[in-house]
Amino acid sequence: MSHPSQAPVPAQPLVSVIIPTRHRLRLLQRAIDSINAQDYPAVEIVLVDNYADEPLRVSDVRSRVPVRVVRTPRMQPLPTNRNLGASHAQGELLCFLDDDDVYLPIKLCNAVKALQEDPSVDFVYANTEQIGPNGERICISGGEPEIKSFLRWRYIHTNALMLRRKVFEEVRYLDAMTTYEDVEFTSRLFRLGYKARYLPELHAVWYRDGRADQMTRRNWRRAYENWQRLCDFNHEVIVSDKELRGFYHRKMLALSLLQFDVRQAVRSALLAV
Image (cartoon, rainbow, N blue to C red; front, side, top):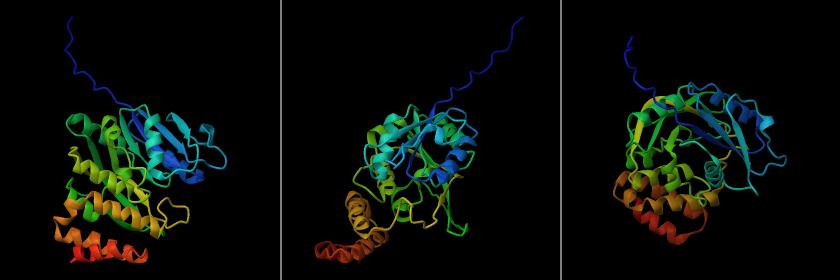
């Protein structure tokens, strides 16, 4: 007796979620819980222990998803930790999650589906909800894959991305970008011509609590150096648009004055008009 043929079930590629962390076990567990709640089964977690006083162990966290821990040889900036985690990941698809943020349950399943539907797409991203110190919603950030709009509004958060591994290996985070590294990374993906797909749905939550231990603490010298890099790396795109040029170079002017960089201040004052 013959049976009707069935369409083959698509293979489920392994997704590696990379989480840099240091001394924030309670928040880290919340992030891991959000991965355990995913609708997608083929997942691993790579924890990057940024040289904590007490080395992080797999047994320190609860997870139904396989976990491995990579310890840095010294304290390192966030982009270096992300690169290190990616080098130890086994998945063909990569995601990143800050240890004080969370994914929504649909994130991995829907992002994988979008990449499988179109092999020409290099990375996908969705919306991120920003939550303030008192639990209030600041905004939901998201938008179409267009570099000028992205540079102006910076609506693609690291937590919202999923990339093919081969793409990440070609681009990687810049170790020197100790802040705004996510903006630089994503703008470089656009500049280099990688194809993106935007999913207009909510995939992640970014807790902007203003805590003293947050990864993006205010440091004016660091902000000055990295904003200058952003302006330089994206110079052709920025100067081609009056609004974008004004936005970036008004901020560059203010940061230059704080650092007594007269030459950069004059240059940015001329470009900002």
